[in-house]
Amino acid sequence: MVRKLIFSMMGVFACGLITAQVSLTNGVNSLEISGSVSTYYNYRILDSVSTEKDKNRFNLRDAQIQLEGRKGKNWEYELQVDLADLGIGSVDPENPGLMDAWMKYKGFSWFDIRLGYGKLAWSRSSLTPFSYSAYWQRPEFLRGSILSRRDIGLELSKEFFNQRLVIIGSVYNGLGEVSLRGDNDVTGALEYVGRIEFAWPIAMKYRETDDKHLRKPVVNIGMGGRYTERNLPQGELFPSSAAGEYGLKLTNGRKCSFGADGVFMYRGLSINAEFYQSVNTPQDTASAYLQGITFAKTKGVYKTGGFVVQGNYFIKPLKLILSARYENYNLNDLLPGTNERISGAIAYQFDGFRSMIKLQTLHILQFENLRPPDWTDQFRIGWQYMF
Amino acid sequence: MRTILILFVFSSFLNAQDVERIFPKQKISVPVEEPSDVCIKGNEFIVVSDKGDVFSLSKDFSQKRLLHANLSDPEGVFCSGDSIWVAEERSRLVTQLLYSNPAAIRSVEIPYSGGRNKGYEAICRNSKGNWLLFTEKEPVWMIELDAQFHEIGRAILQVPGDVSSAAFYNGQLFLLSDEAACVWKMDLATNKILKTYTFNILNAEGLCFEADGSMWILSDAEQNIYQFEKRQW
Image (cartoon, rainbow over all chains, first blue to last red; front, side, top):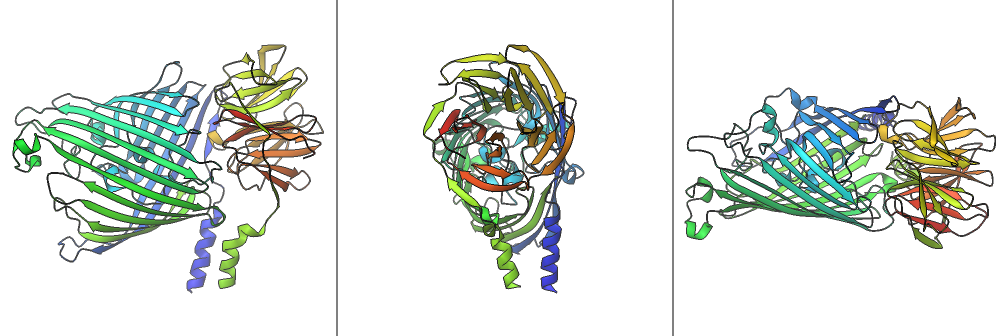
């Protein structure tokens, strides 16, 4: 019975080896229609002392439709929605209902201009499309619950030296995914984001895995920064849920973040590393975020940050990705302790990344008391299909 | 059960073909941004760029002349007589321009509804005078058209990678693969690979041969062109 089941599943997965990505063109305008569906089963081992007992479920992670268009050489636009998340009331910052809605003009010689809603260009991990990962979940501190990943705004970018050097500067509302509600907060402040990256010997796409088995070593180094200052008048609050799951996405005061990332790829091996730190200066020196510690010690500042290191190897003849990841993040440096997690992932490709089974395990090594999790281990297995 | 699983896992090792690793004898920097294909015209190279430009370059690549700008997305180029034909990937156009009067162009649309960025990557002409157009991947289509670009037939090529350029030499079809970093010598009767030449070049996008057997491979991202030894490939 088990054998029959295994062979039946293999047959089903192997069926759609040619994907259904289609495009329309009239010679000047071209429009591509694509999408993806992914579902996984999530199994959790709960913490013995936790009162939260919810566990184990199938989850429809993606039900995406993507329209990418181009007119001539200079005009581009993209609209991407995730129907799996569009209908629910809250916004999952890692997996929101509206993922992209922007237009871009590339006709100026000195920069390209993009206007609309989409990913903020500051972190390589955040910019890497999820479907090109062997994992079912991004690193905790880069998945959008501590710093926003998407927003509405204006982005200017320029590529140099055959795309090896890329410089991006942008300005956004600063409320992240909550900007879609249509309002800013009462400060009317904006967030300024910048990123610079350099690759050698050739430009590199935003990918984690060297599925091409590059014949020469390729590296990419990036740095990003974000700045916003939002001093709320007495009695005013940020829009509901804008501060995110941990209450850290917005600071009533000044928030300055910076980070760096790097990736190395060669013959199937890839190593990704990334760190960031936010320096938060609440306008209220008695803010609860400062934990009641004297100003002399804190200088009115608390920091949030972390780093992640991930190694991947793509066994090309077996169409198999093996990956391991270590992440360490600190929600508030004024509190003792830190958060450590290790993950492992195996992905088998039926048709490249377009049809892939992914298995991820995640183990929590330690956590801060600020936000104790109710589980210690998590396993996810599922299938992603891009059409 | 165990035997079947072993066969399944190691099946990709079983279809081993004739493989030879080749090494370039020289590397030359190409003064064209994002060069995407190359062909030889007399004593010059014709190079197309992702930026939409068509250049003629001297044999040592030290001098260049812009023939035409503002094409949408050139990915393949073929030269014959006074004519240069350019395959444009996203717009699905094949555009003809004359070397002697490059401003005058004429385009033919060859419909293909596959992925926008997985359209026409390579163009060449076979010994019958028919055109061969190749899509990049998912799947790799080889589309044969007559001299007036009317379709004669098409086939999916079962090759282990994408196709980024195509050229004939001594009546044999050679396909370049960026992702597999190799050139496949094809058997036109069966559409199977006869021989694989592997190399250490990143993002190989252009392939052409000189009459004496020199093979040239163009790297888009490196912005270099590599010359290989004269031989009977």
